[in-house]
Image (cartoon, rainbow, N blue to C red; front, side):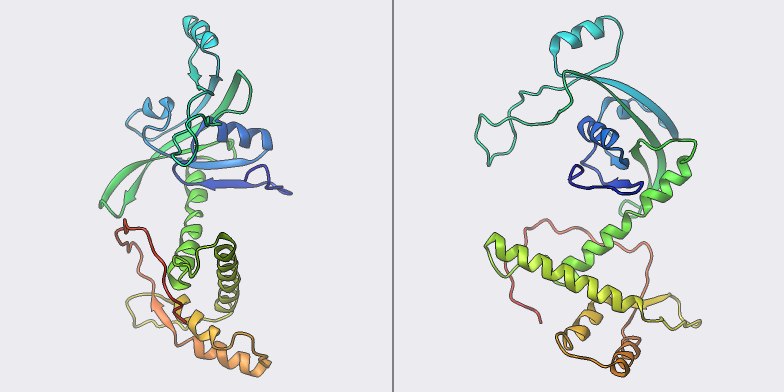
Length: 272
């Protein structure tokens, strides 16, 4: 994905937990991409060795795929990360002889990165927990507070997927063939863009006597717009539609969360 992305301007790639790894770090460094990756507490040795306090540190690690190089460098006191390129794949769908491709940059390679550790409030556990962000951004231009603000922008991706999965029923598919499922995904993407563009053109009325701020309901906007899908609408009627959508309001409740469901979704019929 990183290689297929042709960045024509300076880009910062935001990733959640599970993507932290030396192969991803070095890929972004060589492709000229800046990144911010949320790390797990025991992802790599450098993270495990961090103190129990807020910190911001730079690292340069030597990664090798040769066991002999690992022994020589460690005997000299050099901190080395050894990656076994011949490790069998853990994917049960593949054959037993399949190998994991977890390193692509030669037998010895230095990898530079930066680790930021700070406290953030966990709404699920209702307490402050340590968060780890791994990046290659320059500390002079992007201090710790700026790194926090940049990573918070990733939340827009989560709300986008939430609308795709639940408001547009994108979590359920009506077929089993890959080509048909792909067609449904693209149709959901198109509808999401249409509803978002229309929703952004609506001015939300301000109500000072209410407890919460309000926003236009994405789900009810989708149902309303789907009734006019494929029809030719004049400008005057379009303005009436926008005026009608101002009635479809829902409160903004910050900090609200729900437990994740552990079961796999099955097939469902159309809900529209």
